[in-house]
Length: 296
Ligand SMILES: *Cc1c(COP(=O)(O)O)cnc(C)c1O
Image (cartoon, rainbow, N blue to C red; front, side, top):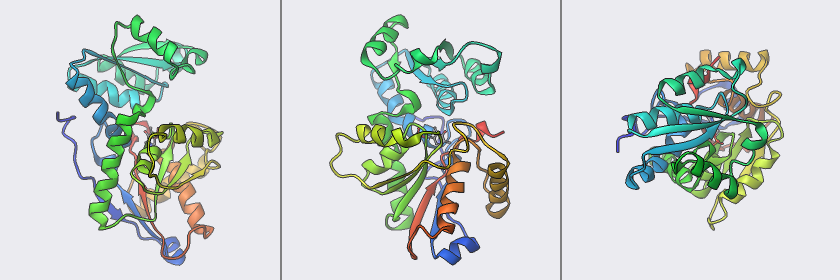
């Protein structure tokens, strides 16, 4: 299976900045944004073993879930098409003008069939009885969880951790990652490494329980530190302070972030470094999880 010819391993680059020098923190960025222009970052990592399973079990169609701005729907529609699967997206929200986003337009162009459901219905997306119902309704497609977040998804993420170990010669004290469903966070923890997770959503405290649930079958896992205060008003919300930070980051490092996930994560990480949260000599690998198609 060549999932659209990924570019692997992705580069690991050290960032240099006076804030890092002053704190004596070594910060590297894992450029998973460069895996593939469409199936980028953690979505590629999380889809990989889901799609291998679908291929091996000779599935015709794939069904998955997401919101109108979902990088996961975007990635699944393109990867599914490239691999010859029909794709069905269950979309949170009404089928109205407001939800005709560029993301969903792209999904349709890839041939994804979109099925809009109310927020109440969407909330049931991980319950067995609902999944039985939906699978029957769409003639038994292969199911991929929201965000690709499943045991297959976690397995793909551990390969990123292995790459970093090889590139760095050892593992860092922490990985830093943006969290939406918590699947990427859980994948790194499942590999035994420590994670600083920055919630992209308001009220992200729930992520801790979701992540523990995903890790229930893993005995050996890393430590989680969850930051919930860098949400900028909620999922996909932003302000000029965040956009200014992203612009400065781009001019300092020549690396583009986006405002939904990676912008907030790096904002929070630099804030914590500036506030001396980390002991001197700490090494952090921050994962650029991609998502640049969602850039404003
Ligand atoms: C989906 C996404 C995330 C969130 O990943 P989870 O595994 O759902 O926590 C982070 N960054 C980007 C760019 C994403 O597209």
